[in-house]
Length: 293
Image 1 (cartoon, rainbow, N blue to C red):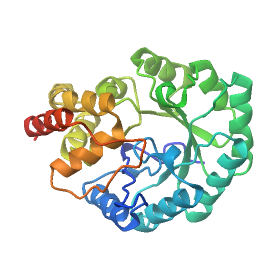
Image 2 (cartoon, rainbow, N blue to C red; image 1 turned 45 degrees about the vertical axis):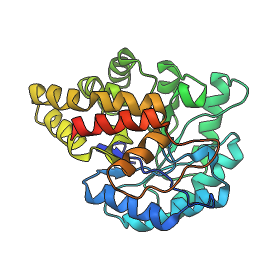
Image 3 (cartoon, rainbow, N blue to C red; image 1 turned 90 degrees about the horizontal axis):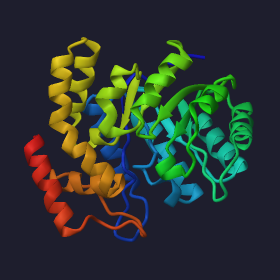
């Protein structure tokens, strides 16, 4: 099983809704196509940007199917399948595999804080039902659980778990992961403001929603890193740093939806309880995008 199927910029499309609060599948496919045409190396529907927790099962299936159909094999597809229960996670993971996903991404979600043994058992059970790779996703800000480097290393004993996405915001942890996991294990940056540091630590790729708004700059950063051109990488990174900080601080779905709108790109609506940016935040984002572009 190839643990470096994904390399480079993995773009996260938003899940747009229509005025009636229903998933706008045609618009989702249009926005996904735009990411592909902009040069994304992979597409990751149903991540935090895709508001996975706010979707019904049938909506998750529709988004999964639409993404895979639109991509049509041109780039790898990483589908978010996380759920509170192991049974539902298995259900969505198997659906994604059958639909043609390249791999699935799983973050442990829980009302009660899970033990490390419970988390390991969760991944182990899901993996036993799949033949495609799993990316273990650590994001304590959204999942409420911070998986230690030791636990992440333990998860890699499970044959299907071949990739790690690290979004804790701790750059030292990324350096530790590279030294602890070895060169053969792929790990990915999920913390936008740490993109440059993560690449320096040896990240195989950058999982980012920012590609919706500044694809050229994201790509230039990755190209500079690949060419070992640190001076260019620094320059390009700090051109986008203010925007990367903003979209994380204001919430990825709302910030990306607004940013697309500012750029004249139809982006649909949000689903309550998520709300559009305030007028002041919208104006600030407009000014940031004007400076970046």
